[in-house]
Image (cartoon, rainbow, N blue to C red; front, top):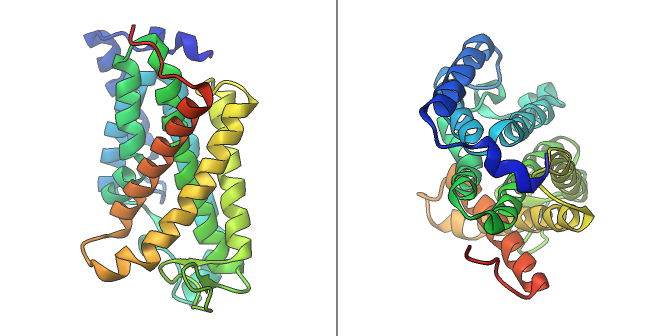
Length: 261
């Protein structure tokens, strides 16, 4: 679906929003036994899905469903080995509400903005939407692959060896996986019509990787100093950095802001 048509799938009517709510409630009721999210996580995922369907229609909703599927799948890779080494995600990898919104708050705000903004602004806002989820999938791919298969894990600030799973740790294998995750998410966004053209795909892919490396830098510095800076909050910061960076670079390359009307 071309970006120019996305405004047409988000009519501000009660029927549209009630349909989005009913669809997501039905799907969550069917899927809640899957070990992907906790019970509360499924409820919040239903709220997220309703907002995305209501704002962007099927493309925006499906993009985040695919993000969840891919993120959950890579988390399960080598899970037994990660569990034996104490590196596995808690709750068997099931995500809770804090994980849902840590990953999706930025994208949700941009989806809402895209639904309300003038058509000229929609491509820029959707670029930020795509970049936020590309960065988060890059982070998940890099973390999960790096913890299991990273041969030489070092701290990003000093390049000194650290145990896998340490805050701010990176590895060659994990960084390569981050690039793959970012490129894959950007490709899905392109296929769903949320991005337009190879240049947008490349920009989102690179921004996703850069934001993931910056997230590691935050983990190695600020997160070590401030206990209130949780992983979920850092995830939110990472996705915001990715979105803002992608939109800023796009505007700089274009040489102008979108028209106000």
